Every structure is written in C-alpha cells, then in structure tokens.
View (cartoon, rainbow, N blue to C red):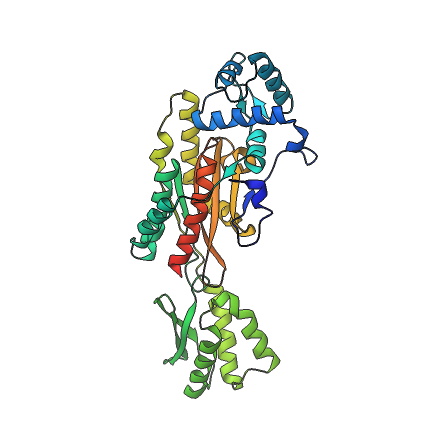
Amino acid sequence: MITVSSLLKNSKNSPKYHGAMSLIPEHFSLSDLDMRTRLIFKDIVESYLATGQPVGSRTLALSGGNSLSPATIRNTMSDLMRLGLLQSPHKSAGRLPSQIGLRLFVDGLLEIGDLPVQERAGLEQSLSGAGDTQKVFEQASAMLAGLAGGAGLVLTPEDGAKGDAVKHVEFVNLDLDQALVIIVYENGRIENRLMARPPGLLPASMERAGNFLSARLKGKRLVDAKTQIIREIKSGRAQIDQAAAGLVAQGLADWSGSEPTERSLIVRGRAQLLENIDAQADIERIQMLFEDLERKQELIELLELTEDADGVKIFIGTENPLFSLSDSSVVIAPYRDSEKNIIGAVGVIGPTRLNYARIIPMVDYTAQLVGRLLR
C-alpha cells in the first residue's frame, strides 16, 4: 500500500495525486504529531469515512485497535481539536475530522492500492462496449457514479479543430470570390467552411495551399500547429507561391477566430447522492449541491483546472468555492489524446466522506481508459 504523499515522489510513470489547495499552515506536518496522536487521528478519520458518524473516545477504545483508555483518547482528541484537525458537531457528541484534518489525512495518511484486476477488466469491458465517443463519455460518467457512490462527471473535449487532429485539407474554388475549404479530421468528421478568395488566385495556387496545409497538419490539432506554420510562411521557408501563402495565412486567421470551443459536461448519478441521508442538514447540503451542479459553466471551469496537474486532483470542501456551502469533495483526473495533450477530464463529486482510497485510483484508471479509447 502507498500513501498520497509518497506517490508525489514516485517516478513520472506512476500516477500522481494532488491536493487542490491545502489549508494546513506550511510549518505544520504529520511529523509534528507523535505516533500515538497520529494513530488516534487516523482511526477517527477512517471511522468517520466508513460510517459518516462522529467518533467518541469510548467507541474508539472498544474498537481494540490501540489498547488505550477512553481518558487517554479524550485527552488526545482535545489536542487534535486545538490543532484544528477535529471538530465537534455538538457539545456532547463525538468528534469529526475538520476540512483541514481531512486534507492532512488524504495528503499524508491515506493508503491507496491499485484497482483489483477484476475491477480493471470490468471497467475496460464496460467502456469498450459503449460504441461511439458520446456513449463512451456517458458510460464513463454513469459507471463512476455507480461504483463511487457519488455523481460521475465527464468534461468532453473542445468541439471543432482545437480538439481534433486533422487528416486532410482541401480548397475548392467557388463563384462570387469565395472559396470552400474542406477539413477532414482523423476521427472521420468532415467540416466545410466558406472563406473569401483573394482576387486573382489561380486553381493551382489553391491546390498548393491545400497540399501545404495537409502536410503540416496531418495528425495534429490546428491549435498546436498554427504558430509553426505562420512562422514558416513569414520566414520565407514555405515552398509555396505568395498567393498560396496568403490563402493559408488568411485561412488560419479565419479558422482561429471561428473555431467552436464549447465543451459539454455530462453528469450522471445524482440519485446516488440521496442515499443514506437521515438528517435535515444532509438534505439541505444535497439540495445546495444539486443547485451547484446546475451551474455547468462554473463546473466546467473547475474541471479545466485539472490541466495544471499531471494526475488526479482532489478538492475538499471550501478548497473549491463552487461547492463551499454544500460540504462536498471532488476527485478529478484529466485524459489525453495521442500526443499526450490534455483534452478533457473525468471525476466524482460527493460528500467529504468519500471513500478516497477506492475512488482516487478508480478515477485515475477511468481517465486512462477514456483517453485510450479516444485514441
């Protein structure tokens, strides 16, 4: 078994798990807790994540995991309260981990293992049998929701040339000083665009412009190759005449300004969030979470933050302002295209007592599968 903090030190081929924004002071670390305090803190958090209930000193003593008296455990709990790692929902109740305590646990004490082979095979079979790309996204979202006990999220790639690799470009001469550009993408999609045709442009120049672009864009996204193509034209290294070069430059400028960048957000499994709710406070929290999930544009912006991390990203409670009132956690991982560019993300959202040890590797592996299937 490995912890989140140890994963951060692994080789670049290992999955990495990142806290979104720690609220723990920089000078504070697990090494500031003695072994007994650390074990009691770990037992409290694990019990809370398993049951969702406050943990009392007597319950912890009777669990038989540490051979300590209730009085000793109470004193340690008081120390952890003063540090801000535990909180008490009621004066006479047990203790719960605070948001800071959960972050410290996830970053330093959480043990994460690989997904069992059987679960990996099940995920692969479910996604590979989904069919087209849209069904892969929908199945991934529903699958994460069912397995994680929260809502599954999938942020799809940008629609249009920014998200798809190009296979072929061709210019066709039209009347009324217009040209039609036909862009064929590697995923089979074909896009036709009208553009103004420079005066006096000959069919031969249009053919050369199409061949020039096809050679430089093949297998690449327009957004990735555009700068290099423009630089080649301006330097005079492009082996095309001035008219063809002008058509290419004009086309790149027009396409960049008109490329659709809309992304879709697929959310499945809202009903999962309603299970095991027995308190009015929980109902109110879920209602607020449902309202947050309807604000899809802000949620898209949240998922796009994964592009700053090379691996799973974890937001706990107020670390993400969008869900600060609903006391929720989000676990997100990016997926990549054939050139290792991040093009989307998958994730799970649920209460802060998510089963992180199970969900983190599950989200990470699902992201890898989605990226592999899209390639």
